[in-house]
Image (cartoon, rainbow, N blue to C red; front, side, top):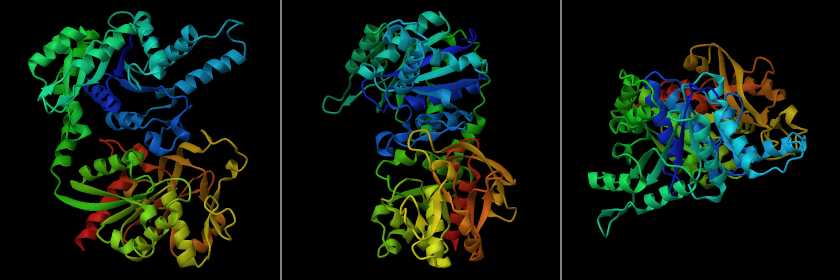
Length: 538
């Protein structure tokens, strides 16, 4: 490991879903604003190799990096806050750790030794802790440990963190423990006992937290902070209040107000650069909170009961909406509830319609009816991945006249497979990590809505799919007015479709939402919102 790199570990206690990812991203943003180069990684204690085969209801969306890694959705937060790409090395699971160790054992790399959790598993965890630091690009590596302290699954990670303190030495290592201070309404009291127990579990594992970040619905009085400091063995100024925020994008400024970054710099013996550059962030927040107009956009998908399934899309609307000073009111609508009889009544109040990515035939016909409604009523439409494929199928059926047109994913025996399995996918029998993943090039037609959005003819976007537009039908579909305005220059894969005589009808095979950040809103989302504004003003 590079001795100049500092390592921060963030653990969680009392309950899950406290927002370790947002605290990690906010601290990273504050350190970045002071001129330090920062990266954040997530270690997840589940046995899946990655989240790629997980149902979104299990774990929220699967986020895809530039290099094609299927990762935890927290990596999306890291990129959105830091504006720096992550990679395969930024998300490691227990499954990957054990897979690596067992692969080495099968190759005989342990020279006949008994392979054990300590030292072999913990050594593998630590080598992944340090991997990004060894690249020499980062001053600070922040590592978020998934799950809760005390979980059986987390024990090897917690032990590896304990060992890392001795590997790294004083001044190079820091543990931040995120915890909950619940408020008992009947007693009108904030209770510190759950946090005391959580820290006790950490101490039993050999780890003394350096800083406590306390999630709370009420301000922490000084006496509560003193109690926490006394019983948890931390300095009083290292008890940080993390009040519930109006927006996740408020958290960096709230943490700055609480001086989290100053405590970190002091403990890591880093120079305290006072000229923090957060002006762009404050400008974004100003626009976000003071919109001059608003639109209502329907997000049509089959996982809408868990909004985290569409986390990157939802955040993309936040970034793009703020950039044009527009409040985007998102209405999440289940495609399973839509049919030919009710589609008008359920969608008539919308200024724009987005059909979301997904897999499988559940809710598919509802998406077909949605696309038809948007197309025939000149409602701005944006289709992403499966959303683009649905648009092609609806157009093929109802405009080109190809009866029974479908995707071979939904109907392997369709007479008109306008969407079909990619050639390289036909011999694959494993599900995990085998899709078309990561960043690929796309060339745009200069007369297109996509070109008007990006302002250039060559773009790179991230992918996650198995099925593609079947070019055997391209000529007949284009003849009726649906044009392929973006293609992969090497394979000819259709990446973007648009309908010529429609105010704004764009479908993309890639996932533009993965690259949207606070400081660089995704261009297609910006133009889609502007089209929705124009539609509302009609």
